[in-house]
Length: 187
Image (cartoon, rainbow, N blue to C red; front, side, top):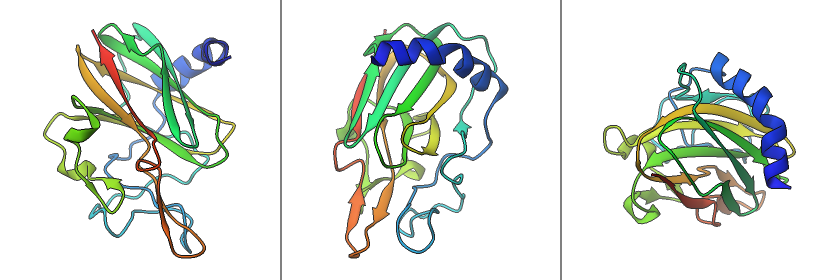
């Protein structure tokens, strides 16, 4: 099923990826709960503003020709890349939100999630070493797909959703801490 969705979306996704979907700098942590609906979390220290959920916005899109593709299923509470590894080059990443909540996909060059700094449930994207932030597909709704083309060299990467939500009862829900993080290898 995942592979079928990926193959069906590849043609459309490639066109979207090559045309570029947006120009956000990707440093914001999403907080989709509370009164604001969306925006930077006060804990993030970031000044950029994220896209409105529902728009296909990709940060870090490459204009070079796509050489490989992967599909990534996002849902409560998982990130599942298919295949789990690929060859270096410009990778067309087709993210399918198979969950009910809005999700995003952040791509960071790192050996493991343990290498990332997490404060108040959010990976501190602004604190990543130079060159570690590869790009992201901003938050988009369940049942939708969004894609981007990212230049990936041979290395280990961490894929995650960095949305932090404030629930109606005031509790904080971190998609990352709920399990929306995995590793990915480019060999």
